[in-house]
Image 1 (cartoon, rainbow, N blue to C red):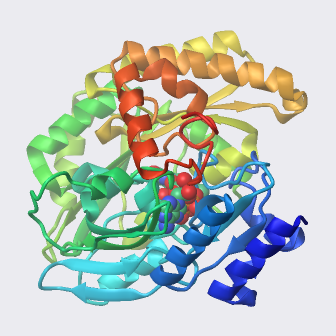
Image 2: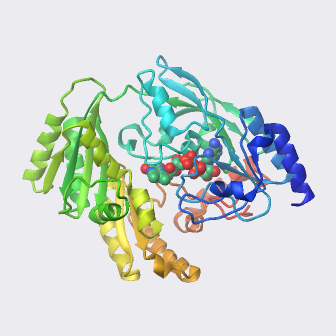
Image 3: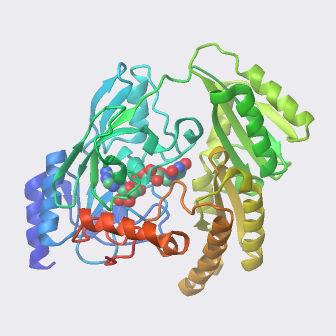
Length: 479
Ligand SMILES: Cc1cc2nc3c(=O)[nH]c(=O)nc-3n(C[C@H](O)[C@H](O)[C@H](O)COP(=O)(O)OP(=O)(O)OC[C@H]3O[C@@H](n4cnc5c(N)ncnc54)[C@H](O)[C@@H]3O)c2cc1C
């Protein structure tokens, strides 16, 4: 280790204490590789500060030594955005020790949490005061709220509550030079100049380290009903959604679609998840209604819409969950998609969003073109269909992915097809996962040059030395 790194390590340990600096490569393993195991980097140290003041001092220390800073939450992100690259001078900063709920107010319907809080902990803290924090996703037991904010995570409740951006009222952020942006306000209305906090939401840790947030809370759902529908296609799912919106309005909480191939991938690889229905059609739709009033019978309106839908030939079959336990079993299938895909092959995952009326043609075209280009690929799909976000995933046979060059070529063809079709249908390539490393090469292809110029301008303004999560969104060193 060079002298300058020895100095840096001493400086970091002086701020957070020796036991919160992980310098040995063996102990760093879990922090220098992404969730999919695709990107492997290295770090001078993984540092765990215990307060905003310590984060600020750590960032200053790194800036002085010219070390790159990689903010990392639960490391569940899909695009390698929390993984250091293989340069010598990276410091991974994790906020695992910053898990305090600073305040929770049933009056203001807000909760103020430190960014290292696990998402499930935020949900539980809200529940303890009879409130609800609606962000929900498969990784909620390990992702951190700082990571959710920095990826502007979506999940299964966007249809009613919006993505994470819509749930954030205020933010505290340590900037790349160590200064603290104090926007930790619980104001629902604030037109005082530019909405600076918005810059940090979805910035993938490239503009600063989120250390705390004020989040919106809601009344908890006290009644619910869930159904699983068997369908021939996406068009039918959208027609059913339109009918549901007319009939039950805002009670429509979640609408998730899965292709048969997606469920088959789970069935084959995730043995602890039962598939509680027969696979007889190409598509499956999970519909959940909720109401904040207790003892509201939502099964009846749901059953009415489903009966109409079946009569109109939109659904082949519908299963109403008879209990909360049965509903949980169905949700378990949905929450296992990422695990199932990871176990099923080399995953080429996409996060497209297209206007609702173009979704059916999008999925048909994209599947046909991928199958023509890479015949051995298995195309599986799942998505938050109500908000236009459909994940098209090509699962490649791992045996054919041993040669990195040939694999990169296959991935590039598939990406090009998806980008092409997404653009043709007026959509965007990232609805909720972000750009990170995985998609940075695609950004220029699908983004207006003026947008990129403005983004780079913001990056240069806040991080002129380019030390905050370099190589994410834009290639490293790109000014
Ligand atoms: C099983 C599974 C299911 C998933 N389902 C969904 C889903 O439905 N919807 C969805 O949107 N995503 C989903 N994801 C992806 C992932 O969980 C989300 O992107 C999540 O928000 C990432 O949080 P994290 O704490 O793990 O962040 P990380 O992966 O650690 O980091 C993600 C990004 O945020 C930055 N970051 C982390 N913490 C901070 C901080 N405090 N300050 C500044 N930057 C920070 C990192 O640098 C990186 O750029 C899923 C992942 C898995 C494994």
